[in-house]
Image (spheres, rainbow, N blue to C red):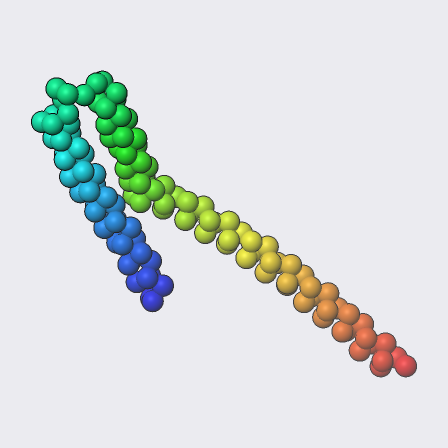
Length: 117
């Protein structure tokens, strides 16, 4: 129960972090383009426009990746890891059971030998 609450809290924290990222992205880009439009548009070369455009597009790509990690890929990555861990646990349990049976057989052999002596 406690692990479920912690997992939900972690998921909610990631989603809230993404929403904050979106707000910062929108505000920063709005300020950047308003600044360019009213102050730098007539005075600057196309280099600043291209730089601002590159910055906005790059940040948008990062924002999309953030969305995918928080809402889409995170669940599948966790599920894959859980499946992998469950398989490892089953394998270890079967090996442990096999070793227990071997020890039990050896113990029975030792008991029968001691009775025969």
